[in-house]
Structure formats: C-alpha cells, structure tokens
Image (cartoon, rainbow, N blue to C red; front, side, top):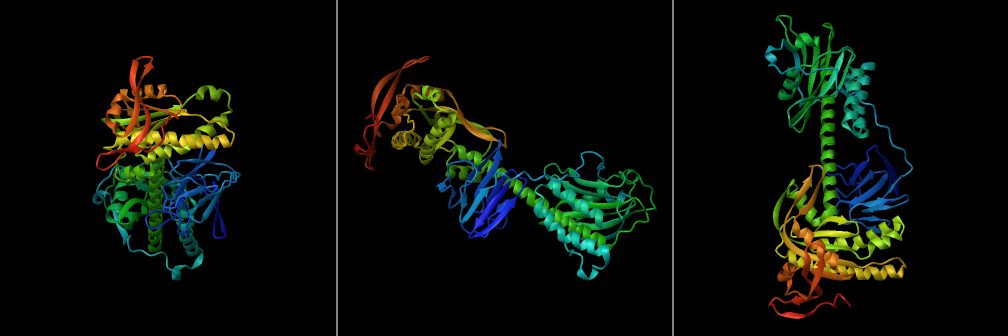
Length: 544
C-alpha cells in the first residue's frame, strides 16, 4: 500500500506491504503503523485504512476531531469505500491512496519448520558445560568507537547501525528476525550455527524463529532457559573432565555464545551462536555484539506484538462500530465486556424496511439500489445510536435494532418509540431531498415490540458479532410487515409501557401464522412534564 501524505505544505510518500494500516499520532506506549506526527490535531489512534476484496476502505476510530472523506465527515459512520483521487483529511494532514502502486514484495524468510531440535531441559550443573565468560546483559554498551579498527570492526559497527533500519523496514517478525540472524552470520565468521528463539508467554514453549547452520546441529534448551532466567550472556565451552550425554553429545557444538532478548526486564527469548571446532574462539567483543543484537531483537518483538495487539483492537472496535454507537463501543472495549456468551432479559425491538422495495429493485440498476440503501441507512443508523439503540443486523432493505442491550436500559421502551418516530421524520426530509434530485424515494414501515430474548456475542474471539434470539424478534417482524409506508405499528405489550407518551389508535392486523393480532398505530408523541402532566402533542400526526 502506498499513501501520499501532506502536512502544511510538506509532502511525503509512505509505503508498506501491509494491507491493514492504523494511522494516528505515536506517543508513549501507543505506536501506530502510519505516524502522522507532528500534527497535534490527529488522535493517537485516529483511523484505519485497509484493503479488502480488491477495494480500499477507510474508517474513523472515534478520533477527537473526526475524519473527512472528500470534505464529508465520516466519524461514527463505519467503513467508507475509497476511490481513485479520494482525499482523506485527519487533523491538518491529507492522505491519498496510490491506487496504481504495485504491491511491495515480501522478503524471503529463513524461518525453519524443520531441521533442528530443542532438547529437553536439564539443570546446567549437569550439562557438561564450563562457562568461560559471562557478562550482565542489562549493562552492555555497543562496541566502542575506539575498538572499531580493521574490516571486522567496521562490519560490526555497520551491523549495529543498520539494525534500526531493518527494524523500521521489516513489517513482520518473520522477515525481521531472520534478517538479523543473517547479519550475525556475516560478522561472526567463527560460528557454524546461529539461532534466535522466542518464548511463548502462554505455554512457556520455546519457538525457533530464525536459524542458520553450516551443518545441522542441536540447540540446548538447558542453556537457552538459563540465559533467560539469569539475564546474563555468556560464552561456554564443552568440558573435558566429565562424561557427556544427551544434548551435548547430540549437539556436536564445542564452543558457543548465548544472550537473552530483554525488554523492560522481561526475557522474551534468546539468541545464540556456536561452533563445532574446539579451536574456535569467541571474544568479549563477540558476546557484547550478541547482547546488542539481542536487545534490538527484543525491542522489535515487543513493538510488533504491541502493533498486532493494536491492530486486533482496531478490528474489534471496527466491528463494534458497525453495531453500536461510538460511545457504547468504547464502553464495551474499555470495560472488558467483549466476551462470547449471552444472557436472557427483556428488550425493545425495532424492525423497519422499505415498502415496495422488491418491485422497485427490479427496475433499478445494482449501483442505484446500493446508493439508495446507503442514503437511507446514512440518516437512520445515527438516529438509532442517538437513542441508545444497537443495530443487530441489516436485513437487505431493512434494519433490526435492539434497545436495552447489550447494557441494561430502564427506558428502553421509550427510547425505541422515540427512535421510530424520529426515523420517520428523517426519512420524510430525505425523501424531499431525493425528490429534488429526481431520484427514487421510498417510505418505510416500522414495527415495535418488547419481550424476553437471549442476546449476546456469538462467533469467535477474533470475529464476534452481537445478536438476539427469541420469539419476540419474529413477533416484531409481523408488525413491521403490516405497517404501511410512513407507519409505526406497535404491539399491545409495547403500548402498555409507553401509553402515557404516545397517541395511538388500536387496530387489527392479519398474519399468516398467528391469525389476527391487535396492534396500535402511532399518531404522535406526547410530552410528559416532571409533574406527570401531559402537554399538547409535540409533533404533527405521522400519517398526514
């Protein structure tokens, strides 16, 4: 992906092989993939751009000042498709996607699924290893400039200087870590095997992430775990005064070095080099270099893990924003309420769809149909969110919304009613605007009902969606199907809770399976003062 960035007259081109990019302002412990610093009007996690099914998309991640697409605010409106020459403005920075850019090639990796083994752990006192030299891995400086004489020293210094460059350009650990090990091969010619291992924090297993060897050798899990536990790098040599067995016999390594990957006091893994020749020599300078490489690798691992966590959180939040208002989405994300499972309680349900849509759709082009649906959803969804509602799903030309979930709401009946009335109002206004543009307009029928349902998050931890299940959902659909254009029909159960707020006429609707059902046709909302006195109706009748 190639993105052209412009801030106060300064232009830059940012390029990455990643297909999902979070942009914002990187500060403290919140790095982002595309850093728009020093634009202070950009939020730390401002928005997201990604490629999906051959198209580019953008969304605002509830930034403080919003995001504009071609001059139109998209905050709170979910994902928006991007087209060539579209302009995204975050703060004072303008972003444009280069649709003609070819994908960057992914670097080849030396990650091995097979070819070496991690042997069972054994206490180091029994390993047949004599530690020739060890140093505190938390107090090592890079190679001193005074030591940089000759080709070997120049190579080492260049490697240390190049590590930040590799850290910045390699976008995945699978490309970064093998590249680091490859450089060790160049600057440690006495070695015959080089390896980088990470510890799985959940299982405590050691994962071989990068490995190079002149001849297949074995790694000692005993020494790997020792270097991580003691936070010390060391040079070791095989002892000649003991009978060896196990890993030392199988390994074939006579001399080697190990260094921990330390980040903020935690050992994330280890890095090693070894030789099969007893005459091979590793110096103090060699082990210091290994420690520096290990620290850079640890920083890279920690940074990539944090970026992956932020990416996953942005995806979860993006999914939430499709169903919940930004306020509710933030509450669920920050309060740890995102768990698979459900509960049973009473909610209010709103079902709406377009009257005569099927016949109209036969006479319209596909892009015209999508444009019309998006135009109506653009004004209807914010109304639902404004009244504490949740969008359960889009039903083709309709919407199923829930009030009183996922968080309890003592006024969910009233909120559902007011949302329905306001939805009909904004539909009328939109129809006037569409009539002025000489494009098709349609009316909506809305059904309201309340009852007990099972509601919660279904799916997987990576992709969960909120939904409701129960007969009350089917009952709501009956009232929606019977509602004429610009009508709101509600059930007797709903009317019992909102009768003081609404003027409604009782009627009967015919259904296919339940027979005739009592319904109430909403005429208008009444305002009830704090004293309980009902004032004059606040709106014109809906059916005028």
